[in-house]
Length: 265
Image 1 (cartoon, helix red, strand yellow):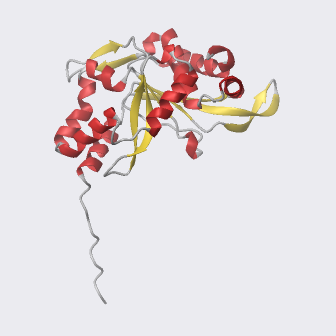
Image 2 (cartoon, rainbow, N blue to C red; image 1 turned 90 degrees about the vertical axis):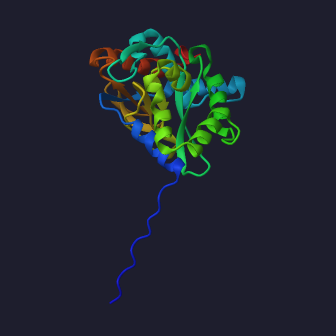
Image 3 (spheres, rainbow, N blue to C red; image 1 turned 120 degrees about the vertical axis):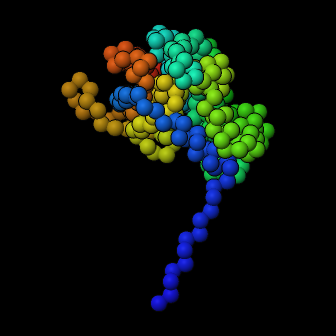
Protein backbone atom coordinates (compact mmCIF):
# COMPACT_ATOMS: atom_id res chain seq x y z
CA UNK A 1 0.00 0.00 0.00
CA UNK A 2 1.52 3.27 -1.09
CA UNK A 3 1.99 6.11 1.33
CA UNK A 4 -0.13 9.13 0.39
CA UNK A 5 1.86 12.10 -0.75
CA UNK A 6 2.11 14.92 1.79
CA UNK A 7 -0.01 17.98 1.01
CA UNK A 8 1.72 20.75 -0.83
CA UNK A 9 2.00 23.82 1.35
CA UNK A 10 2.62 27.28 -0.01
CA UNK A 11 3.28 30.50 1.83
CA UNK A 12 0.77 33.26 1.00
CA UNK A 13 2.33 36.15 -0.86
CA UNK A 14 3.07 39.41 0.89
CA UNK A 15 -0.11 41.18 -0.20
CA UNK A 16 -2.33 38.28 0.91
CA UNK A 17 -0.65 38.27 4.32
CA UNK A 18 -1.09 42.02 4.61
CA UNK A 19 -4.80 41.72 3.84
CA UNK A 20 -5.04 39.04 6.52
CA UNK A 21 -3.69 41.66 8.92
CA UNK A 22 -6.30 44.11 7.67
CA UNK A 23 -9.09 41.60 8.31
CA UNK A 24 -7.62 40.79 11.73
CA UNK A 25 -7.49 44.50 12.53
CA UNK A 26 -11.22 44.74 11.78
CA UNK A 27 -12.06 42.58 14.79
CA UNK A 28 -13.66 44.63 17.53
CA UNK A 29 -14.25 43.77 21.18
CA UNK A 30 -16.70 46.23 22.71
CA UNK A 31 -19.51 45.88 20.20
CA UNK A 32 -23.29 45.74 20.46
CA UNK A 33 -25.67 44.99 17.59
CA UNK A 34 -29.14 46.35 16.87
CA UNK A 35 -31.23 44.78 14.10
CA UNK A 36 -34.60 45.61 12.61
CA UNK A 37 -36.55 45.43 9.37
CA UNK A 38 -37.78 48.69 7.89
CA UNK A 39 -40.45 49.48 5.32
CA UNK A 40 -38.67 50.36 2.05
CA UNK A 41 -41.76 51.72 0.27
CA UNK A 42 -40.64 55.35 0.55
CA UNK A 43 -37.12 54.44 -0.58
CA UNK A 44 -38.46 52.83 -3.73
CA UNK A 45 -40.81 55.76 -4.31
CA UNK A 46 -37.92 58.23 -4.09
CA UNK A 47 -35.78 56.12 -6.42
CA UNK A 48 -38.56 55.96 -9.00
CA UNK A 49 -39.34 59.68 -8.80
CA UNK A 50 -35.65 60.51 -9.18
CA UNK A 51 -35.47 58.26 -12.22
CA UNK A 52 -38.45 60.00 -13.81
CA UNK A 53 -36.83 63.42 -13.33
CA UNK A 54 -33.11 62.63 -13.74
CA UNK A 55 -33.03 59.42 -15.74
CA UNK A 56 -31.04 57.71 -12.96
CA UNK A 57 -31.92 55.96 -9.73
CA UNK A 58 -29.99 56.61 -6.52
CA UNK A 59 -28.57 53.37 -5.14
CA UNK A 60 -29.72 51.95 -1.83
CA UNK A 61 -26.16 52.34 -0.57
CA UNK A 62 -26.19 56.05 -1.38
CA UNK A 63 -29.53 56.49 0.38
CA UNK A 64 -28.27 54.71 3.51
CA UNK A 65 -25.04 56.74 3.48
CA UNK A 66 -27.02 59.98 3.21
CA UNK A 67 -29.44 58.92 5.96
CA UNK A 68 -26.53 58.00 8.24
CA UNK A 69 -25.00 61.46 7.76
CA UNK A 70 -28.28 63.18 8.62
CA UNK A 71 -28.72 61.02 11.73
CA UNK A 72 -25.12 61.70 12.82
CA UNK A 73 -25.72 65.42 12.43
CA UNK A 74 -28.66 65.17 14.83
CA UNK A 75 -26.87 62.83 17.25
CA UNK A 76 -23.20 63.94 17.27
CA UNK A 77 -22.42 61.65 20.22
CA UNK A 78 -22.58 58.76 17.72
CA UNK A 79 -19.81 60.37 15.67
CA UNK A 80 -16.94 59.66 18.06
CA UNK A 81 -14.04 57.23 18.38
CA UNK A 82 -11.45 56.20 20.95
CA UNK A 83 -8.07 56.87 19.32
CA UNK A 84 -4.47 57.35 20.30
CA UNK A 85 -1.45 55.27 21.32
CA UNK A 86 -1.75 52.72 24.15
CA UNK A 87 -2.16 54.31 27.59
CA UNK A 88 -2.89 57.68 25.96
CA UNK A 89 -6.14 56.95 24.18
CA UNK A 90 -8.88 59.54 24.29
CA UNK A 91 -12.37 60.15 23.01
CA UNK A 92 -12.29 62.05 19.72
CA UNK A 93 -15.35 63.95 18.51
CA UNK A 94 -15.63 64.13 14.73
CA UNK A 95 -17.20 67.18 13.11
CA UNK A 96 -16.87 65.98 9.53
CA UNK A 97 -19.45 63.99 7.59
CA UNK A 98 -16.97 61.92 5.57
CA UNK A 99 -18.38 58.39 5.55
CA UNK A 100 -16.42 55.34 4.47
CA UNK A 101 -18.10 52.75 2.26
CA UNK A 102 -17.04 49.18 1.52
CA UNK A 103 -16.11 48.60 -2.12
CA UNK A 104 -15.40 45.10 -3.41
CA UNK A 105 -12.65 45.04 -6.02
CA UNK A 106 -10.15 42.69 -7.56
CA UNK A 107 -6.66 43.66 -6.47
CA UNK A 108 -3.60 42.59 -8.46
CA UNK A 109 -1.72 39.66 -6.87
CA UNK A 110 -4.56 38.95 -4.43
CA UNK A 111 -8.04 37.47 -4.32
CA UNK A 112 -11.14 39.64 -4.58
CA UNK A 113 -11.05 41.82 -1.49
CA UNK A 114 -13.22 44.45 0.10
CA UNK A 115 -11.52 47.81 0.19
CA UNK A 116 -12.92 51.02 1.60
CA UNK A 117 -13.14 54.51 0.18
CA UNK A 118 -14.49 57.66 1.75
CA UNK A 119 -17.29 59.89 0.48
CA UNK A 120 -16.49 63.43 1.62
CA UNK A 121 -19.08 65.92 2.94
CA UNK A 122 -21.98 63.49 2.58
CA UNK A 123 -24.49 65.79 4.26
CA UNK A 124 -23.99 68.37 1.50
CA UNK A 125 -24.59 65.94 -1.38
CA UNK A 126 -27.74 64.51 -2.89
CA UNK A 127 -28.28 60.72 -2.99
CA UNK A 128 -27.77 60.87 -6.76
CA UNK A 129 -24.44 62.70 -6.32
CA UNK A 130 -23.35 60.01 -3.87
CA UNK A 131 -24.48 57.27 -6.27
CA UNK A 132 -22.37 58.73 -9.07
CA UNK A 133 -19.37 59.04 -6.80
CA UNK A 134 -19.73 55.43 -5.66
CA UNK A 135 -20.01 54.32 -9.28
CA UNK A 136 -16.84 56.19 -10.17
CA UNK A 137 -15.02 54.50 -7.30
CA UNK A 138 -16.39 51.10 -8.28
CA UNK A 139 -15.27 51.40 -11.90
CA UNK A 140 -11.91 53.04 -11.18
CA UNK A 141 -8.83 51.14 -12.28
CA UNK A 142 -6.95 49.91 -9.18
CA UNK A 143 -3.73 50.39 -11.09
CA UNK A 144 -4.35 54.14 -11.49
CA UNK A 145 -6.72 55.07 -8.65
CA UNK A 146 -4.47 57.24 -6.39
CA UNK A 147 -5.59 55.80 -3.08
CA UNK A 148 -5.67 52.15 -4.08
CA UNK A 149 -2.48 52.43 -6.12
CA UNK A 150 -0.66 53.82 -3.09
CA UNK A 151 -2.17 51.23 -0.75
CA UNK A 152 -1.45 48.15 -2.88
CA UNK A 153 1.94 49.56 -3.90
CA UNK A 154 3.05 49.93 -0.31
CA UNK A 155 1.74 46.49 0.66
CA UNK A 156 3.60 44.86 -2.22
CA UNK A 157 6.91 46.48 -1.23
CA UNK A 158 6.92 46.69 2.55
CA UNK A 159 7.79 43.80 4.87
CA UNK A 160 4.67 42.35 6.48
CA UNK A 161 5.60 43.75 9.90
CA UNK A 162 5.69 47.29 8.48
CA UNK A 163 2.50 46.84 6.47
CA UNK A 164 0.76 45.75 9.68
CA UNK A 165 1.91 48.94 11.39
CA UNK A 166 0.73 50.97 8.38
CA UNK A 167 -2.74 49.43 8.56
CA UNK A 168 -2.99 50.05 12.31
CA UNK A 169 -1.51 53.57 12.30
CA UNK A 170 -4.80 55.53 11.93
CA UNK A 171 -6.14 54.27 15.26
CA UNK A 172 -3.08 55.78 16.97
CA UNK A 173 -3.10 59.09 15.05
CA UNK A 174 -6.50 60.86 14.95
CA UNK A 175 -5.49 63.11 12.04
CA UNK A 176 -4.61 60.01 10.00
CA UNK A 177 -7.94 58.43 10.91
CA UNK A 178 -9.80 61.42 9.48
CA UNK A 179 -7.63 61.36 6.36
CA UNK A 180 -7.92 57.63 5.63
CA UNK A 181 -11.09 56.46 7.42
CA UNK A 182 -13.37 59.48 7.45
CA UNK A 183 -15.40 59.81 10.63
CA UNK A 184 -16.85 57.25 13.03
CA UNK A 185 -19.24 55.66 10.51
CA UNK A 186 -18.74 52.84 8.03
CA UNK A 187 -21.43 51.59 5.62
CA UNK A 188 -21.43 48.11 4.15
CA UNK A 189 -23.93 45.80 2.47
CA UNK A 190 -23.98 42.22 1.15
CA UNK A 191 -27.40 42.83 -0.42
CA UNK A 192 -26.27 42.20 -4.00
CA UNK A 193 -25.47 38.62 -3.00
CA UNK A 194 -29.01 38.03 -1.72
CA UNK A 195 -28.04 38.22 1.97
CA UNK A 196 -30.71 39.48 4.35
CA UNK A 197 -29.21 40.21 7.77
CA UNK A 198 -25.51 40.51 8.45
CA UNK A 199 -23.56 41.33 11.60
CA UNK A 200 -19.84 41.96 11.34
CA UNK A 201 -17.62 43.68 13.89
CA UNK A 202 -15.44 46.34 12.25
CA UNK A 203 -12.78 48.78 13.39
CA UNK A 204 -15.09 51.75 12.92
CA UNK A 205 -16.97 52.64 16.12
CA UNK A 206 -20.26 52.70 14.19
CA UNK A 207 -21.09 50.39 11.30
CA UNK A 208 -24.36 50.60 9.37
CA UNK A 209 -25.24 47.52 7.32
CA UNK A 210 -28.29 46.69 5.25
CA UNK A 211 -29.49 43.55 3.52
CA UNK A 212 -31.44 42.55 0.45
CA UNK A 213 -34.42 44.80 -0.27
CA UNK A 214 -37.30 42.57 -1.36
CA UNK A 215 -40.96 41.72 -0.76
CA UNK A 216 -41.65 40.31 2.70
CA UNK A 217 -44.80 39.81 4.79
CA UNK A 218 -45.18 42.41 7.54
CA UNK A 219 -47.92 43.44 9.94
CA UNK A 220 -49.64 46.75 9.04
CA UNK A 221 -52.48 47.95 11.28
CA UNK A 222 -53.14 44.42 12.48
CA UNK A 223 -53.16 42.97 8.97
CA UNK A 224 -50.49 40.98 7.15
CA UNK A 225 -49.32 42.73 4.00
CA UNK A 226 -46.52 42.06 1.55
CA UNK A 227 -44.25 45.07 1.25
CA UNK A 228 -40.71 45.86 0.20
CA UNK A 229 -38.53 45.86 3.29
CA UNK A 230 -34.88 46.47 4.10
CA UNK A 231 -33.05 44.59 6.89
CA UNK A 232 -31.05 47.20 8.80
CA UNK A 233 -28.27 46.69 11.34
CA UNK A 234 -25.99 48.93 13.35
CA UNK A 235 -22.91 47.72 15.18
CA UNK A 236 -21.54 50.19 17.72
CA UNK A 237 -18.84 50.50 20.33
CA UNK A 238 -20.57 50.54 23.72
CA UNK A 239 -17.71 52.62 25.12
CA UNK A 240 -18.77 55.42 22.74
CA UNK A 241 -22.49 55.35 23.46
CA UNK A 242 -24.68 53.27 25.71
CA UNK A 243 -27.73 51.32 24.65
CA UNK A 244 -30.37 54.01 25.06
CA UNK A 245 -28.51 56.75 23.13
CA UNK A 246 -27.66 54.21 20.43
CA UNK A 247 -31.33 53.24 20.21
CA UNK A 248 -32.29 56.91 19.68
CA UNK A 249 -29.77 57.15 16.85
CA UNK A 250 -30.90 53.85 15.32
CA UNK A 251 -34.58 54.75 15.48
CA UNK A 252 -33.91 58.12 13.84
CA UNK A 253 -31.87 56.45 11.09
CA UNK A 254 -34.74 54.04 10.43
CA UNK A 255 -37.25 56.93 10.48
CA UNK A 256 -35.26 58.84 7.85
CA UNK A 257 -35.13 55.79 5.60
CA UNK A 258 -38.82 54.96 6.05
CA UNK A 259 -39.67 58.56 5.11
CA UNK A 260 -37.02 58.87 2.42
CA UNK A 261 -39.30 60.61 -0.07
CA UNK A 262 -39.49 63.55 2.39
CA UNK A 263 -36.23 63.33 4.35
CA UNK A 264 -33.69 62.51 1.63
CA UNK A 265 -34.60 64.86 -1.21
